[in-house]
Structures are given as structure tokens and as C-alpha cells.
Image 1 (tube, rainbow, N blue to C red):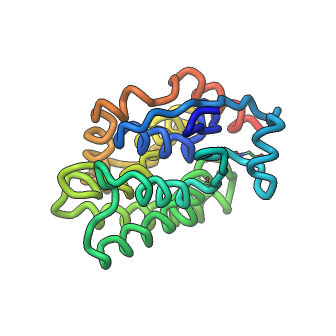
Image 2: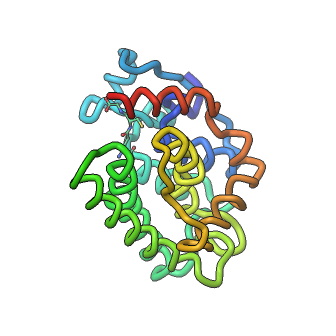
Image 3: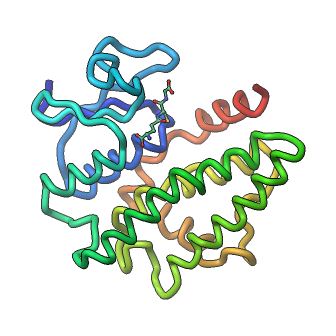
Length: 215
Ligand SMILES: N[C@@H](CCC(=O)N[C@@H](CS)C(=O)NCC(=O)O)C(=O)O
């Protein structure tokens, strides 16, 4: 096995963060593309607790959980720093990364996948959560400042998936007038060459989310 191997799926937004981080830091890596619901014996061996991607294997040793993997990559390869230097800014970026995964992502998915009252509640939550994140962009082009950093990679799933979720659900998630900074960030982030070239194929994402919507 190569020095660095990433277990991922074609559509996993969590794994995509790791692809982007490795490319930004110009770290060579091998990819093992999992085809869920089948999980390879190696994936189960390397991530017996959660049995999920991404799994990052460095010199034969596995690490799971994308936020943990990003921290490991940052500490191991110093080039192109992803985290701010200032400890308070670093802590703040970690706070919003956790918020993004625990609150924002959940509320957005529920706002398109749930029905009835649950959906209405999720929509209100999603709107409020988007406004919180919008505030983090005030005065900045990217969450990382002038260039993309850790929080951009963590929230990158919005650039990747919001358009797909809007198309497959027929609902607006981000309105330009409500979140102009986030709207612009999605455009700018998606145009960064390393980000753009690694985006999963749109048709595959559409079929996946159409199936989810029907289920
Ligand atoms: N908190 C985890 C989430 C990873 C995750 O949910 N991965 C999904 C793919 S997007 C997965 O492997 N799901 C397989 C399963 O749930 O069985 C992370 O940040 O790495």
C-alpha cells in the first residue's frame, strides 16, 4: 500500500474534504473507492467502530472521522497551512466546523428530506443556521480569509451539494438576498481549480439524491 491511502466513495462530502486537503498540500495518495452498500474487508478492518468513509491510512495506520483526519494532515505536513495561526481563530474555526456538521448539515438535509411539520421546523432551523455561517464570512472572501482553509474545506459540501439538493427537491435552500456572502462564497470556492477538478460527477449525485428523495 502507498504511504498515504484514502478510502472514500465517489459522493461522500466528508471524504471530499480530505481529497481537497491532500491536493492543496500536494501530498501524493492512493484512493480506494468503496461501492456502498458493499464495504470492503479493508474498510471494516480499518474503521471497525463506524464502518464509514473517509478512512485515511498513513504508513499502514488508519485514522477515521474527517475532522480528525484534517487535523492530522495539518500537523504532519506543514506546507500550505489550512488552519489560522492565531489560537483563538483556530478554536473559532473548529467551533464552526463542528456546528456545520452537527447543526447546519442536519437541518439542511432534513429541510428537503422530511415532510410536514418536521420539514417546516427544519427549514426554520436551516435558515437560522445559514445566517450564523453567513456572519463568519463578513469582511472575508473565504472562511480562511483571502485563501481557502480548514473551515472552507469542512463547509465545502455546501458548494458541492446545495445545488443538487435544490434541484432534486425543487426547493430553494440558499437565497441570494438572504445570504449574499454565502452565495458568493459558493461561487468563488467552486471556481478554485483544485476544488473544481475534484468535484464528484453531477449526474451521479443527482441520481443518488433523487433516490434518497423518493425513499
Ligand atoms: N462524521 C463522519 C461522517 C462520515 C460519513 O457519514 N460517511 C458516510 C458516507 S458520506 C458513510 O461512510 N456511510 C456509510 C454508512 O453509514 O454505513 C466524518 O466526518 O468522517
